[in-house]
Structure formats: structure tokens, C-alpha cells
Length: 603
Image 1 (cartoon, helix red, strand yellow):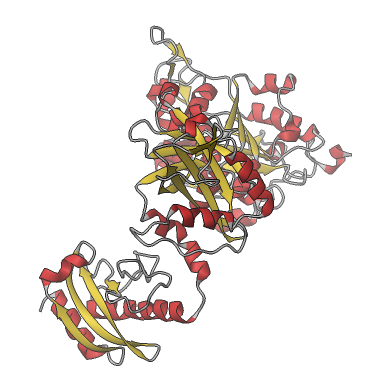
Image 2: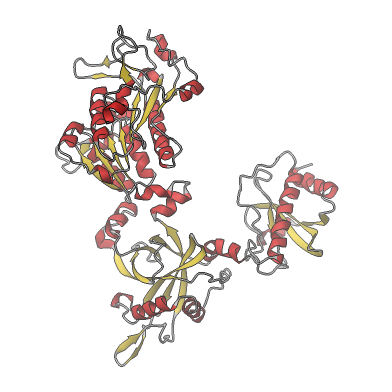
């Protein structure tokens, strides 16, 4: 018995009382349903105490893929989640885990969800569901599309700039007038300024409470319907602004007009969609003045819908589960090597408004396999005839401008001691400082400087230990001064030298290696170690911002010590602690007599 036969057999034996009857559909009749349907059958069921017939379609990869359900006889009219071809959308998760060993049970489990969708749509007002799905329904009528950078929180009617993509002129880029559109289009769409054709688009935010059914597939609104819908659903202030804009249509729009509409879904969300007006014979003219179609419609006019792809940072961050609160935050990253380059990239991905990069060093080929950048950024490409080394900060800036154009990147290719001595940073404008230098004496000087500021932002230090045994993140100045970088460095007795109390390696060991004599020394650790530490830094920034970390803890991750021990090195007693013990002891490094952060010193 094949899957189809066993599925039908299971439903006949176990589907009562949900399924009253089953009728097989011949394979020659499957073309009317969506593609990739291998088998189909009709089922007689009862919904709201009335008979109903649905079609069940089994895809070729069923039961790995969920079955399809159709209201092929249009028994339920226009309700949410029921598409024009009768397809019933009953789940938003195609990866729903169901026991594939019993394909008949898969169908019955899904059928229960389908019945719930149909009953809810028939008995309750589901306007909100329509609004939630409005953009999806709208897109089904569109062959045109627009990529947009809009401020959706601005509820005023206003002019936007719209650019025609030269390849087809049915793909647009629409943005606010304060956007550097040429740079963005060159970066994103790889178009030169000479290829751009700019026209006017008008953004129209509709009133709260506006509702309309989305147009059915192939049955788009007429011009009159479109005009009436707009004019009946904007407030008086926006209507006056709109009429003024329509009274001075630019010559570039003499045969076309473009509108973006914002349809409120709830207080925080809008459906954004667009329409193009085309009047091939031009506007109606009266007394040598052209009258916009909204004032007097020409004989020939067509309306074409276009769907929207948002590019604005806030939407994209929310779409990917990011934290929109970072869009107005700023950070300074000191040291953009193996750890710092990954941290800086993570901050850009998090949507930070501005990132300042400080590092005096050039990008070196020898560090590529631990760095966020690659070989193509080692030399500056401004002069292809000469091999000019590139500062790490400048190379990262170019990368961010190319990949994350909404983040402002400032670069200071100088040593941090010079930056501090010359007061090159206004620390009152900085939300977070992340130090990834890996040089204790330099970090101590940063620690002393930041603690002398009246209102220092949180300062987070990070470093990695050799040969994969672990890494550390130290939080300081997190709403209190007690506990700082200096606290980590002290002897535990008069007989011992100063050492880093967080270290997973016993003191007195040297880990540096050289592959070519003096000037080529390095500490051996892999990109996995630097990435692990950088990710811990980024998670720490998130937790500090949300108030999930209080005070100034030392946070460590432990790696595998096998390679470390094999080379004859010895681990410290702190390495032998469990992860739970390390967490419990995260504040014990505080030095009550610290010359930098102790209460005595602060007085």
C-alpha cells in the first residue's frame, strides 16, 4: 500500500466523526490546483452545523511537506486566510513538526486547524487579520515592485523621491528626501548616478481605523475606486497638503504619478503598498494649466499596483529579531584586530547609529585568518599602481559603508593614548566603550582615564587566552565604580608577583611564538577563540543595555585544555572551576584597596 492509499485508508478508519465521506480526484484534474500536487481527494465535513466540501491535495514530498486544503466550491465567501483560488492558509509554520510515520494522522491534524480557520472567519470580525495580511494579498496583483527607505512614524503627507531602475522601469527605489539615494543605490543596486531617473512619489498615511478588503487576484481597483479610497480615508490636514502637492505636479511626472500608502494595522505597525497612475495622453489642460487626475481625470488612465520591500533599518532589525533600541546608540571600539573587528561588525549588524573605531595599526596579511576582513582589504585600492597598506579602521569603514550604510562610522587611526591625551572623543555622546587591545598596560591607562570622567559610559574589556583554553569579558563603570580592570592585577601574597587573577593559565609561563625572528611574535589562538570572545562581548552589550547585568562582573568562557596541556603548559586553579562556580565568583576580583576604583580613592 503506497502513501496515498494508506493516507486515505487511515482517514476512513480514524477520521470519524470529522470526515463523513471521501471521493478520489483523478490525476487528470489536478491542474486546477497549485503546482506540485501529486494526489487529491474531496472530503465531506461539517462546519458550523452545515455540510461543506473541501479538497485535500498531497504534495509530491508529502508527508514531509504539509497537505494543501482548498475551498474549491467557494462556499465560505471572503474571509481571512482564504485566497482567491480557494487555498486555505491554516499555518504560518511550514516546519511544523508532525509524526511523518502516520501520514493519515498528519492530514487529520491539519484538517482540525483548517476547520478552526474557517469557523473563526465565518463567525467573528477578522478585519485585523485582513490588515495583517494586506501586503501579501496586494502583492499577488503586482508585477511592479519598489524598494523603500521610509520614515513610517511620520504621519504627514509628503513628497518622496522615486528612482526608476534602468533595467525594466517597473522596479523602483523610493526614499525620503534627506536620504543620500545615489550612494545607497550605488552600494545596494550597483547603479551609477548617470543611470538614475528621478521622479516624484507622494506618501499618504491613512487614518487610524481605515479598513478595506484587499483586491482579488486579477481584479485591481479602478482609478475612481483608488481615488475615493484615498480621499475618504485621510484627515483634513493631510487632505489639504495632498491637494497642494497635486496642484504643482512636476514635469517629470507629466504622464505618471506614484503613490505610497500607509494603512494602519495597529498603533505600531502599518501595511505599506503603492500604486502607479499612467495617463498616456497626459493630463487634462484648462486655461494652459494641467489638472491632476485627482482634480479632473483624463479619458485614458490606468492604475498599476506595486508591492513594497522595506529597507529601513528599524524594520529589518525587528524582522531579524534584533533590538531596535540600538538604532540611536553609539559605541567606541578600541582595537579592531581579531576580536575588535568582529565586535565592531556585530555592533553594525545590531543597528548602532554611530561607531567610532580607534586603532593605529595597518591590516596585515599575517592576521587575515583571525580578522573579520580578507585579503582584498590589505591594500588601499585608490591607487592600483602602488601597494599602499591600509589602516584597519579605514578598511572596516569601507566594509561597513558597503554592507551597513545606515551606520555612521568614524575612524581614528591613532594610538589610544594619543586619542585620550588630545581629547579627540566627546565621551558624553558615547553609550558604550569596548576595549579589545589585549595589552594590559594600555588597558590600565584606559581604565584610569575613564574612571576620572564624571559620567563615563560602561567600558567593556575583552581578551583571549592562548591555545583555546578560554577568553574573558570584563564589565566596568556599569552604573557604579566598584570593580575595574586594575583590580584584576595584583599579587595574592607578598611573595608572589603581580598577575591577572582571571587567567586560566598559571602565572610565569610564556606563550608567544615566532615564525620569523624578532618582530614576528604572536600569541597562538584560532579564529574560533576570537569569535567566541567577540560574541560574548556582543551578548554582554545586549545584557548591559537591558539591565540584565548589574555591577561590574568578570565573565569568562572555558575552552578545551587538551592542546594547551599537550604543549606542556599548566592551567590555573581558576580554570578548574565549573562554569557555575565562575559565575558565582564573578565579583570576587574586586579589590577594596584598588587605587582606581576603591571608595577611598573616589573620596
